[in-house]
Image 1 (tube, rainbow, N blue to C red):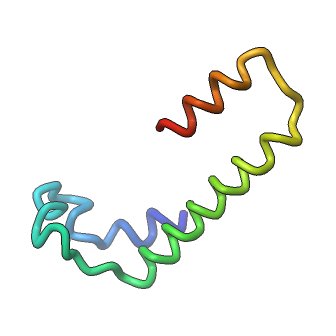
Image 2: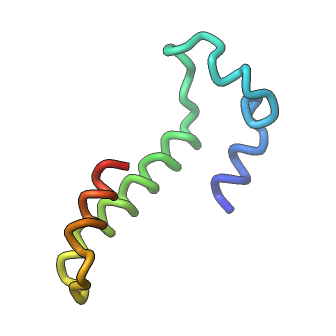
Amino acid sequence: MYAMNHLWVSPWMWDVRQCWHNYPFQPLSPQQYNYYVAELAFYWSLMVSQFTDVKRKDFVIMFVHHLAT
């Protein structure tokens, strides 16, 4: 909900060509920064917690897959 609320008003949400305008020096709004930090924290927590979860047969394969992607 946070992402949709703040990304909805971004010009590049509706015109994909705006993604490349002034690349790579696009401004980063505080709302975007907060969203990126929250997403990064979420994925880091998943990466740490996977070692305490029940191990499945494909643990190593999935671990490498998620690191690569």
